[in-house]
Image (tube, rainbow, N blue to C red; front, side, top):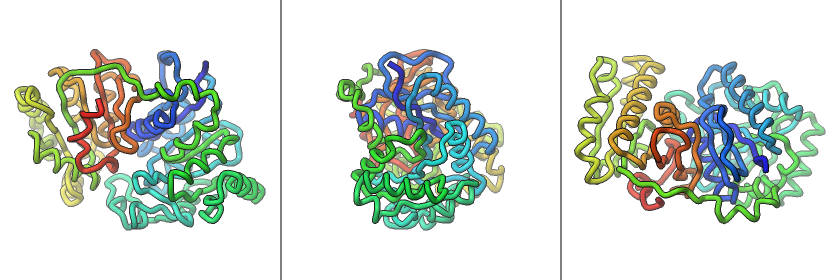
Length: 419
């Protein structure tokens, strides 16, 4: 049977986040790293193609997303899903609006939604404004994001600046009345010439209602939260739901590689450092030509036997800005990503079989260095972060790819128990 749902994610951890939510909702799911070249494993209900397009130039992001869509169409998928971050982060030029618009054109549809809400991780939308916890997006730590700072919480306004199609709103007065009311509002907006509808959501129940209302849409654009509501639209899933999270057994040594500088990751690194050995990667040392990769692996080799180790470049906003000022934003990011990817590859060669990676850009670099072609999605560690089994690569490997903003402070400490 062909996959039912075909998904395109704009970064690696975002793809894993979405895939984990689909598994939680009962869909057997694989995440592919880039547009696949190999056939899918059998018995798959949903495919997530993870790109690295969130911060690419707009033209590149659109081209990559359209290539992914063509592959998913050939695979026989019935509905398509463009997944972006629950903080809707992008630059004023995109890439959310241009990619979504290009996918709509390719699918010959004139209407879709935009809903990054993820209440389990305290991302909610009310009257079109995105909240992170109790504060609007532009008052959260996302205002300091090094690549995609978000300075406006009004999603209608943010998306309208990125697209030629008109953007409207399905506000909470409609959403709380359920799927039928939401569908009626969709019809009214379409009649007004609206192409994108930002949809309010405050709870998982809202997401389930929104998902039901999206049953007839060729394309859904959202964060991962809506994944809770889409599987209900495919009745044939009933037989596979109980097996969706099964993974093959894994072993090996344990390590964490952290490149994210988010507030959540800062707390997780601090908690891990308090209990386990930790090695810091400094971009200024990398820029000077120091063999940081070799030093990190030599440091880790004798310590891995006694338990998990942490290698991190996570730093507070002031330290990040200082490095960017000295090296330039792109160079600082590239140096750290390349070094952490090389360290991760070396750790696996040392016998690490269970690896946690924090940060979307870091995760993308790591899976590429390891030759991972895809991920079979397994049990959830925290909302939006599952364990996965690598497809491809030289040896069995369990991977947890964590978006920087996700997870409790003890994430790195408790994740192993879920295996």
